[in-house]
Image 1 (cartoon, rainbow, N blue to C red):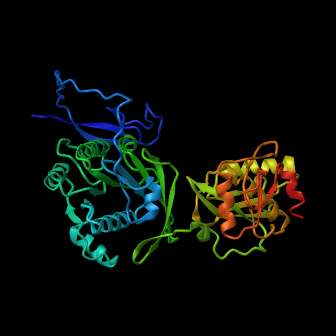
Image 2: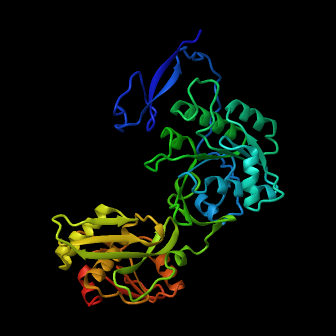
Amino acid sequence: MTKIKKQFSCNNCGSVSNKWLGQCPDCGEWGSISEELASSSKITVPRGGTAQGLDLLSDAVLDTIRTKTPIEELNRVLGGGLVSGSAILIGGDPGIGKSTLLLQLSSKLAQNNIGCLYITGEESTNQIKLRAKRLDINDSKTGLLAATNVEDIISTIDKHKNELDLVVIDSIQTVATSQLSSAPGTVSQIRASAHILINYAKQNNITLLLACHVNKDGQLAGPKVLEHMVDTVLYFEGDHNNHFRILRSIKNRFGGVNEIGVFEMTSAGLMEITNPSELFLMERENNVSGTAVFAGTQGSRPLLIEIQALTCPTNMVTPRRSVVGWDTNRLSMIIAVLGVRYGLNLSSHEVYLSVAGGLKITDPAADLAVAAALISAAKNVPLPSKSIFFGEVGLSGEVRKVAQTEARIKEASKLGFERMFCATKENFGATIEPIIHLKQLKGLIV
């Protein structure tokens, strides 16, 4: 008989040990070791094999079959549409809208005579139908299946493989293979189940969409190797108190990374936001101090975002620095540069910085907009109306040029902004006011 024993696996890197450890010895992650059952029977490795043919790098390239979806924001994030035979992993917080997006996508593609199968391991088919009725999805040809066994799923797909182009698994944590004795959701089950599903999808040229939960740290739950196995990794970002959702590409073998798609969660499902710049600037007042408009980019998409700053006198030895949507360390650097190179001392003030609209930005070009907002807040003087700021600030106080300058300026001009403060001197059909050093802001903010 096969003897069952326990083993301990790391949820971050998948390494296996025979005892529990507080820290993983391979990746160094703390608290990531979890217990699971494993079979002690030896795995037989085949000694013989068949020689395979080789391709040359100079051989003709087959055109990638890409299917454009009816959801343009999703096409942008994917790099133009769904690639046949690819595996896509989409993660997000519970209730953020993953299942809603996948159901809407499946139904719209099925209406265009594209074979779709929606497999759920968390709900019954009747619950899926109730959600479809709430989203006003009628006469859909999407196939539904409630199953958690990988072998049953593969058999069902194989039976209808000539009719299927897209298969949705919601979610990968609920499926399990009978080859392993461990429970569904464990590292070994997720890794083995995903491997079987991805291999079958690639061999039969079927696009596979995998929904995935996230843990309390906001990372995809499961082994890190799962992200390496798939072709595309998408994250759903957003706050449950805010009805806007952002779909961001973290990894994409067939397109650019860090592309975003903006959606609005309504009673009828997820609706596309075609002009997100207006969303992040709505109801903005021009005569308020401490606000600056930043011309940023997310992937290849230019976005205008409002940066809000507030300074407050305090008697604390260590004043508070609170940041929402930006890097705390970078804010500390900008405060230090303003103190030394500009002459603005904020050592006795609390500083609060927020990116409007719930967006998280990592673009270093936001330095100049943050500096302008801090100066405006400290002096209680509003910035010039209809102006934007972008540029990277160095430790010496100089403002450096950034990428995609022309796209940023064109987006600002389209929305009615007239004055562009940046490091470039080129004329892109707008009023450019070059800022080479932070000291030049003294004549701007009086």
